[in-house]
Amino acid sequence: MNAGAASSDAPFSGQALSLWVLTDGKIGDDVQCLAVAGALSADFEKRVIAPRWPWQWLAPWGPIDPRDAPQRPDSPIAPPFPDVLIASGRRAIPYARAVKRASNGKTFVVIMKDPRIAPRHADLIWAPLHDRLSGANVVSTLTSPHGLGAKLTEARANPAPKIAKLQRPMLGVVLGGPSGGAQFGARATDDLVQKILAAKNNFAALAVVASRRTPAELLRTVGGAVAGPDGFVWDGSGDNPYIDILANASALIVTADSHNMMSEAAATGAAVYAWRPPGLARKLGWFVDQLEGLGAVRPLVGEVEAFNAAPIDATAEIVAEIRRRLKDGAD
Image (cartoon, rainbow, N blue to C red):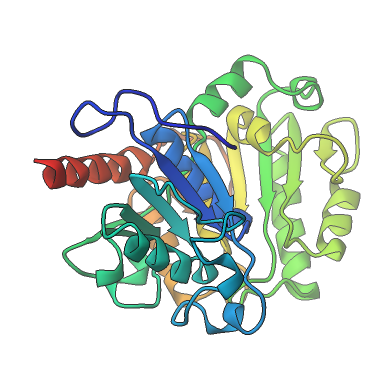
């Protein structure tokens, strides 16, 4: 996305708000940054950094790649500098610091997730509660931000044809993969598949979508087990039906290895069941515990059925805090 100045609903002085999103292009970082940026402004610039070796290895503590110095016209952080910069990912942190310095402190820097450096380098840091990050300029929420709100509404009104043709009620399955110790070996795969098959009996149809981390063997096994006219497994071809499945499922089974995936599922209002892979990181286990304590999620044990759950969405809270701090700084 490449845009100019933001809409006139800027949170200070009635002026247009210029805004950059800065990452190295990883989807986990992009999802959160773009969600917050999109809620702050209808227009913003997406800038991608790609430092060379050894500067990428030195991040987040070291300097930026010299070829990306702000004074170079082809630099990803060439001026004019924005009013607000939203950055995420360790490789982006040196660049956020560089913009702060080069703008003489005028750019308001927001860092998404623990930057692994002193919090003073940002005006505001968002981190999930399970990171246990604290500080005067830190805001934490249980779930992560996302930009699904309007997309879910649209997908419910006009679902993708491959999802629209499935009977209701529909069970959705969102598969992750190995991450932070989470294991998806043969025994884990068999356990998950058996639980999906048992859950499927209470629904007229089942739709499965995988992530980039999903092992091929897991996807093949699940696909073979649920094959049939009442089952759909996205094989990676065509448009990704992820949002369509989230929007139209009466219940969702989600592997708990991704904070983003669990957060997005909890925002739908559907009944969410978490499957915890062996080796799941302790902090993610704590996160799922909290969702279960709120009644937003249930463990994938025993019967799977639809239940009423209030959607949980932290995006508005994070955006409101950015606006408040911008306004306070402008007064």
